[in-house]
Length: 607
Image (cartoon, rainbow, N blue to C red; front, top):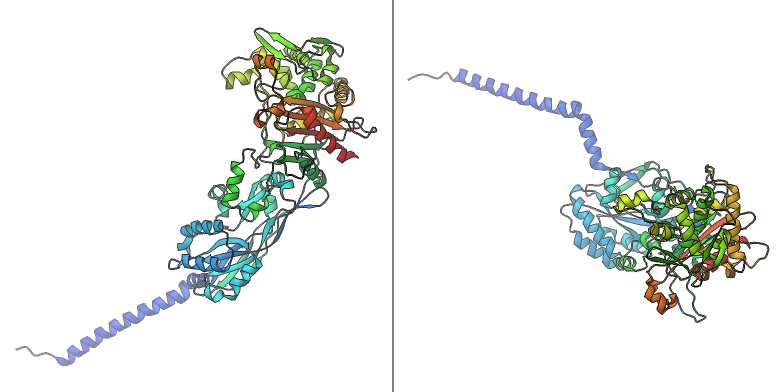
């Protein structure tokens, strides 16, 4: 039997243990060295990330003022409420408790649930609302121990002191949507940011928004904010001064009210627009669209019921008719047709056509508004009395291409760079356009319709106001703007001044001569005169059978089957300052509905 050497066995085991102990100590020492020296910066950063939250700070939005410094869009103090997300958070219970002590908007709750569903795993502060009152915040503050996940900050909220008076122009701001984030991915961390959604708020959003600041918040293990420090101040947005005169804007809007009797009853506003432009600078002093809306309902968070009411309204109050409404211009473009004829030499000042009330062309009949005709009249008289047959004859002589060229020179279907995204360009048809769009050739009958601003032709009120401004100015191609004191450079208006003087004289006769279609709307002040042109646009075709039986009067038709009423003009006559365009949808006659509104607005400006 082999003997074991106990001493050697003990020594060997001791050596093995010593080696193992040395290796363990070496590994542990190396790991401590690695943590404390090599990876010191990494874990220092992680430690700070666990202790501090870093966020960007939304700057105060720039304010908007009218030409006289009156506030149109401003900011007021508000409180933003946040909830710290967590996978183990009973969010329904927290929301129930909050709703029991505050007047939380139901839409805010629903929007928050959608955001929370997408972000709750990220352990971030999720924006809920900025619609809480001081009283709501006080209620939460005294019971804050019940809401360890809730935080709130003082912020600014957009308000519109003038409400509906400037609603279409100023527009409104709104919360970021998925569509907004696709266009601005750098804003993905700003669930509480409101951006311009409509009007000037949208067009000048970046200027009004400003530059973000930076904030560091110290939090505890549960994510509760302990301290908050602003280490980089945000730069507030730039203020905006626009050319609108609030007094004229307000008066023009009220003048569109449909007051039919002296009874104390509410009458729905007329549907239409009023625009006033400075013919020397292009500044818009008035840009009214009716019916309108109050942008404050979007600022506080529009409710589903309110939104449905707006979008289901048949008169479309959200539509800015002043820049987005497209209408056949009717007789308001007869000056352009006349200028096209004079410039091309196909007619002279004394040239005459005979009007017997109807123009027959092939198997078609084109009627004048005057059933029995105007007789043998010249160009000035045709404008003054708005003779359709005269312009049927003139249109056929000039042709659609020359008419279209003059209309574009005067601002119709042109590249007008107004500071609103909602601007829609009108349509001046041509032979090429019809072939490309309709697939058929242009016909003489379509030229006849176009010569009195009907058929395919469409324009918006801004374009018609620009057209009159250029005629009144007679020197430059005036461009409209909503900015106050904007230095604009205009190109020369390449039209014979003698022809322009002749046309302006005819426009004066429209208002100031007893045969003029707007004679009843001349200014009451004998020292100041207005020039202009009326327009009445049919929206339904009148058959020969209906003419024989007797045309149904506008007032006896359904509202949407009545004619549109238009008037364009400028004043004063001798030294023009302002051009104006009034359109009343389904308002009937331009001379009886639109012209009186223009007269009163111009009087408000000049008298």
